[in-house]
Image (cartoon, rainbow, N blue to C red):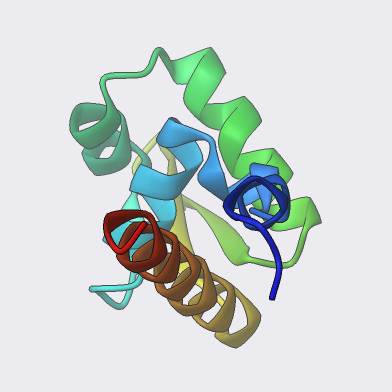
Length: 104
């Protein structure tokens, strides 16, 4: 059996970062979300949110679709099947860590 510290070290840092975990958790409970909704939810600046979305997209955890609505760009994000599985696994790891820590 691995130690709690080893298990904690095995947490996916890409997902565990609070802003990205918020984004992924929100996207896992809906079909898609637009940029302004995610910005409101996370409290991030447009630049920070854009950076986090890019990192998640590059990892294959979300897909981004940009369309023109009127004269404005509309950015929508949706979680990929890989992303859904990664978030599910992440929460399971955290639950297991919490369970093991409370039994020590």
